[in-house]
Image 1 (cartoon, rainbow, N blue to C red):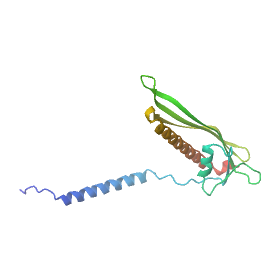
Image 2 (cartoon, one colour):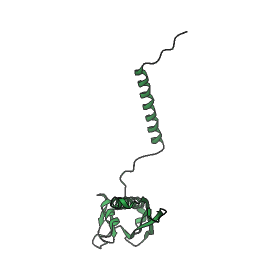
Image 3 (tube, rainbow, N blue to C red):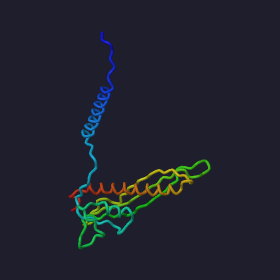
Image 4 (cartoon, rainbow, N blue to C red):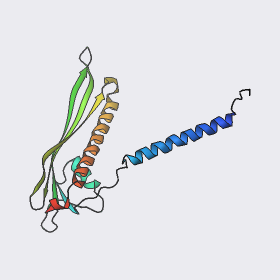
Length: 182
């Protein structure tokens, strides 16, 4: 009978490294096999778009800045350079609702909402998106002793919601097919 020999520390370290690399490789293959890929630049079926109102609110301005060089953003739908699509940002509304209070009636939690209504039509007037609404909401705790910090956090959350809404609008515009532009 052979006596039991403990493994050397270097052998254990090598085996752990092999197991770790095998697990990483399996996870990578699993993600590749399911069709996962990072969101890249979007391809649009149009090259000219007008965004109204001009200049519009913060959502309309961020939308104008979000298009790459492949899409020309026009200030208004002018006869000299007609837009293929006209995006109307009808309304962008911020809401702040109390959702939590303590026993003495002091506010402890708010819900922030950003609602954006929009419509999309072709240059010939064909409606593609009719009066659609996109809503984002975030919860924020409140403490009156840190009111200034909570105001900054609120502004940051509204900015984050605005960016999310702009990305959703861009994905909807990327879904427009060339046949819809006629």
